[in-house]
Amino acid sequence: MDSLSSRLSDRIREYRVKANLTQAQLAELIEESTNTISRWETGFYLPRVPDLEKLAHALKVKLSDLLPEDKK
Image (cartoon, rainbow, N blue to C red; front, side):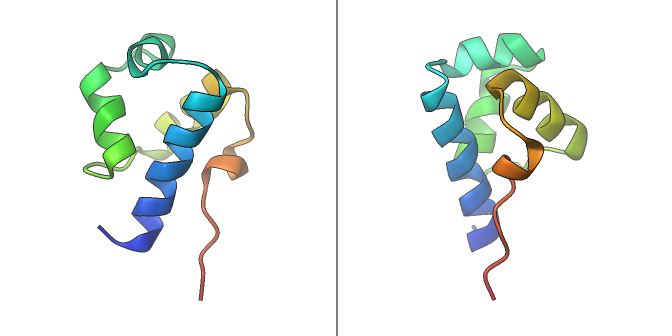
């Protein structure tokens, strides 16, 4: 897993935990499966932009909060 996907996965997990939500609760909020949330948090899959927007809304953060900065 490259560092960008790793940082994105970490941010999704971090904000979910801060929101005091389980993977199942977050999945229900954004109408996805728990497996999908798990795959996003492990970096197995990356969410598409519409999914990121749903995540940001459900987690009550800005979309830019979820997106890791590109370290050069």
